[in-house]
Image (cartoon, rainbow, N blue to C red; front, side, top):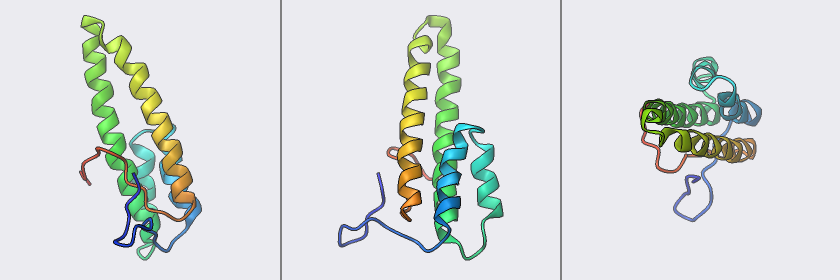
Amino acid sequence: MSVETDDGEPETAEGDTTLAALAHASALVASVLRPILFLVLADDDDELVKENAKNSLNFQIVMFVAFVISGILTVVLIGLLLIPIFAIIDLVLVLIATVKANNGEVYEYPYTPSIV
């Protein structure tokens, strides 16, 4: 879900759209580590990269917890069903977020709390 302003337009911020998109896409390679890297390395005045990296990090923390719980639930076999479902959800939402960030939008993942 992208954040919308009062007039219904998606929230945009000034900044490097390529780095903002990479903050999301790189999470597919190194779940939590890459968004942290982009958050730390972003310029102080680059709100687009910072906000997208924070949102990506929050989502990857939630996905990490979901995968850990699914791993534990493999003992009762339900985890074997949940792991691929969570993997597909992660892939699809990260791809959507990457495209939105590349368009200069601040993308906020659905049902994801602000942890960072």
